Length: 463
Image: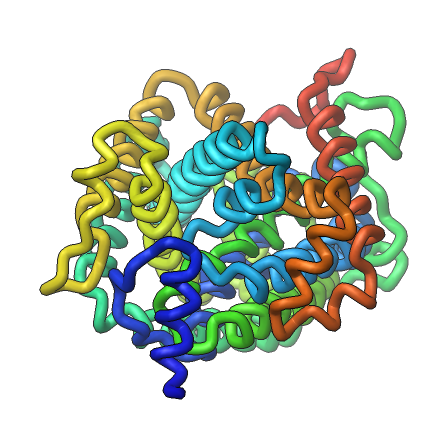
């Protein structure tokens, strides 16, 4: 039997028809998945949070810690995708694993959290790219003062540009692979250029033993946990590949490979990238107070010694960010479409339609992008409110990857029997309940800690 026939039968057994062409390969799915997670880009975008909340110690050791947790997440996602390769991802698994009387509610709540999380993730990427572009302009025009509306304009341009890339399905697998190679090439260039051009280098003690606490928390341990939001961001959105399950052949085998490779590549790139940056760092205070508003750009300027060179490296970061945003739009559109297909959003019958000519869920994609554009208006009203809402909704999205795994622990033997049907069932013998319990504990600790406020104000308030 052909693989396409087997995939179709499996999808029909779940109660769904074939709506999208299976044009993706494992490399293109990896391209979309890693381009969205893009661990080294995440470290660049959130560098200031990490410096204030632990400094080099937080990022260097935090990456190792979050990689261990992310590996647990990836194994759980791989198991579930192997057993239930469905574009709905977490909300579909919640429905399958939860007790019958709670299944609909659990699925509905998980679906909304996942989609809302993808919307605000897209918003955070747009704001990062817009801020980076303005930072480059400010670096060459010192008298220029960045205003909120400037950032808002950059935000909307980024969102609209990524929208058009996702309007024609046949090119998306190629775009995903291109984004992957751009990210890896940019990483390599920066990894070599910054340490080699830096006029001076920090010693090993600064990189591996220097702890900075500007959070306002008196306890360094609490500051470290708060700072983990930076390294956690570097391994966000690992579920992206699961939502392409209906666009690749043999998803029960290929999707787990893409997910686990995303974590592996993410650790290698982010850890070596962070170490290279900290060895090349000269003046931490100037990074915290840079008028560009982009600490990584200021670090490039310190190391390279020329504005042109710093902007060239930042352009590589921005190109990587654009690929990240395109992948994020792919992710959020599939989430919206699959959720609408199951009647999870208002006017589901309209938004669940696939544009057969373009081979994309164009209506779901358009609505998601419009909501992202509206969310950007919050930035004009309040920078703090925008950051707070983005952080909160991102935590909700992360919690959706925890729920199905925890439900798997609760239902126990039944879940493991169901998961045995997938080709990746051997992962269940590695760390099934242990991995899922670690995910649950980590999510709970981080959520409770990050929702609290310090009793004193930090010495640096510009984040």
